[in-house]
Length: 500
View 1 (cartoon, one colour):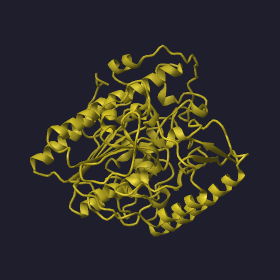
View 2 (cartoon, one colour):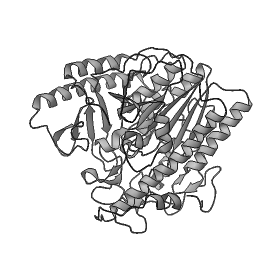
View 3 (cartoon, one colour):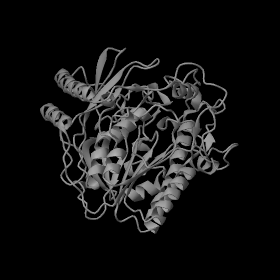
View 4 (cartoon, rainbow, N blue to C red):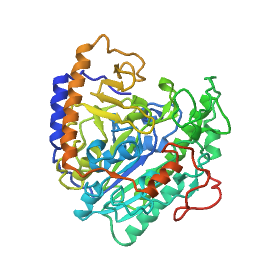
């Protein structure tokens, strides 16, 4: 789907990284009254029709893509929710703001979030989130994603199928909650707002409503079976939290993953329909992305994320629907009629894009506003997974065509050409020592810049005991998952949801 790109030089890439570390453009958009940021948890770009997937998982997003600009090479900062979303909400790399490792740190209260910035400029802010790691659940510790939101709805309506301690909210309830807030804002005459809606559905275990599961049940050409493992790591086996009644057929899990995407797609379409039906579409900038992807067997990682930084777990979908009068970046028209940008972009570009669209000076960010002038080329962007609770360090650097990936325990660097080898199966490092050295030099520049940025930010805000216990029960901390569920969150329903 993506057009072939000219190979960037590492000299340009290094210069671009230095420029990115110095701040963002201050382009200001016109005509934007409100922004809706939609994030879907654990969603791979290559399972959507707009990125060439043929199974019809995403008709509503494909429709949105035809009036948007689609970014073909977009990357998360990390393959886990909290550090990835911290990159979105701060416009900085998660290491700079103390949101590492994993999902164990809150955004410190001293770090200004996107919502705080917009609220200070008179924009009403609201969030509807459906992943419990995005909320403090009443913790007295300051900080976190709630900062700056006038309305923060984290009501979870049902338990996970496997980890009964895990609460979540399925797509139809998430859309209902978002529309409820929109109706209230409309009744108050408030049509200048920032709304973040975070859907959870493709995150495992994959338990879509039966009608979707039946639609995507295939003939299972891939006959492989993988044993269910004793932990959640997914290296060579199926994580225990994905275990669906002992099922071992890999295609069954892949089909259910696709069905979860289709379920989400239908209900995010209802959100878009509401905006259109209530005359709010024209002046609304819509940004759609995912926090990270999911391994579906690549490199022998099965139905998991947060265990490496290969492309399947850090490449994310990104599309921006620009209202009339807002300068969209130069894009190529693909054979599917979708305007596409092949230049490298990342989560750190989301915040300055939203700020610029609303006429708020982005200030100093690691990213660039994807508005107006051409998207910068010759960039490099890092992706990192730091040591944490049995995980070793993984790091990667992307320049738009090549990715350098290395694993602390393995002690070697792997180089991949993602245009020719999107699955990262052929290691080119041995034959390209100069490129490996140049990319490592670029990474050192990033390291120095983030150390400087970290020095200017607040100290890490570790979890309090209550939140740490919650994470242990959810399986994010060493130890067995608790059989007893967490206290029911506000608004939770007891019993099962028949549509889920």
